[in-house]
Length: 297
Length: 335
Image (cartoon, rainbow over all chains, first blue to last red; front, side, top):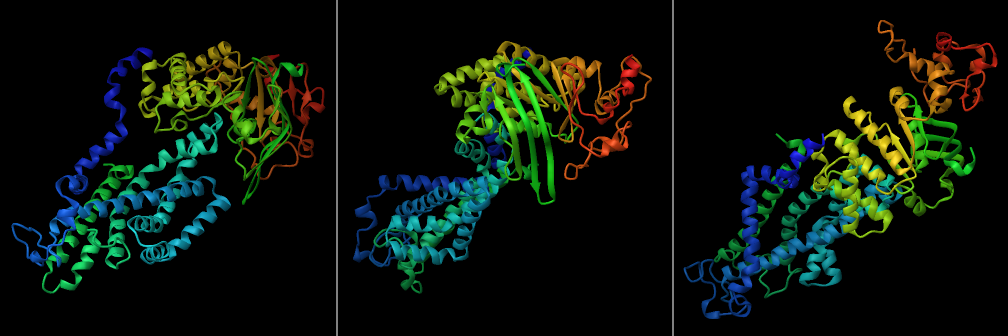
């Protein structure tokens, strides 16, 4: 028996990451997911490199009245807005705001939702009831309205916008986390961990949570898209990022007055939002299919 | 046996599960004493309360719905009932370890086996991560798995290997008492023998005591010094290996032996115990085994029989022995 095991030891390395490798293998087969992933990666790269390509003062917020309201041309592929700023530059730079709002808002909801959801799912009983009823109260208020109220209450700034969007999508993370913790906490290895003297907190974070991560990861990916939309909508209504910051929702809002004669001013930021959200959703969908073992063929 | 030589001393332990469908009397007033370096076999069929007894030693009976009542529960001189949950965590894995039935599900799938063995060591021995991992590797080697495999995940091991890993986790901190809950039930017969042999050797090497829960009398004969037979949450017969196997007294124990194939008489028909285990939510007022017992009389239904001394270390709970002439068929054959 021992001989046998020693024979298998050398190919340890390629076997080691087999769970994540398996997910990646299945993800690669899914064309939609790969397109989504490629677009998302390109967008993130664009956001990261924007300050190297463009000078914020000169290219993004500098007004140039002589070139105002120009249609798309070689010099300005997406045209210029009512103060003569290049829309393509603003969209490229704006990806920094839109994406960071999306990712940070989701991080905020993860930070709120995952601990609360795990506590509710792990302990059950009164604590569970209390946390879940609280989540139900939040879920019963329309997400957008709630975000609007939060921003109105704590004041208007980019950071508050992220906070507002994050807080409002936290209840759905509480639910997802609780549901998957509920199944993981009854596993034998949790009881075994108790039997070797592991404390509750360590059991939750070391044994239960890592085994219930996959639905949370999927939920997070999908939520980035909707967080971007919520943030853009708030900016569109003038409750989010304030001008002249080139946030996509705020740009849509700025182009609204000119939509009859200069529709490209709303078309391009709108398309930027649409493509980003679509890419993230396609990737999220594919990730869910790849992670869910029940869909294994 | 004096108290100092006892590793486990339980008196009047009762566990019931209060569910919506009624109260399940899983363990009813049992007392057990295990000496140091002894192996006690806890035998009985499914649902006899063996696992619940084991879990209550570690205070792991889920509450609710479980309610544990116990007059005395002392492990290695420590009164388990009086400890705070914090102190209890220090006992688990350090003083008392448990091996669970199914090695397929007791290992956490997202950590390597090395990390899982190291976890116990980190908790109880205040070693650094690296030192704990080093020790984990040597534990793996102790149970016959090459240390190079410490970085692999549970799904890369076979069932028998996983059970070895589980044993390594249980023994990592040198426990005084090891509770093995059907450690070989999920394994095939060839691997069973290996794992039992390993446990027997390690028990000697580490100077441990052991409670072996099983329904396999063959394993008991091979590993145990003492045997307690449980039925419907009560101990019906208890004694040394010799007492139980040679001088069987209780009709239920006889029934267990009769359901085993006889190697000397291969033509003999197996005689299984008729009927089913009594419903633990609705135990009869008298002997729980009476409805299935061939020797049962009217007297059996009146009162739960007490454990009586049947000579030396041998205890038996059967009303039939009120009659000094009574003898079960198996012993007649032997005589």
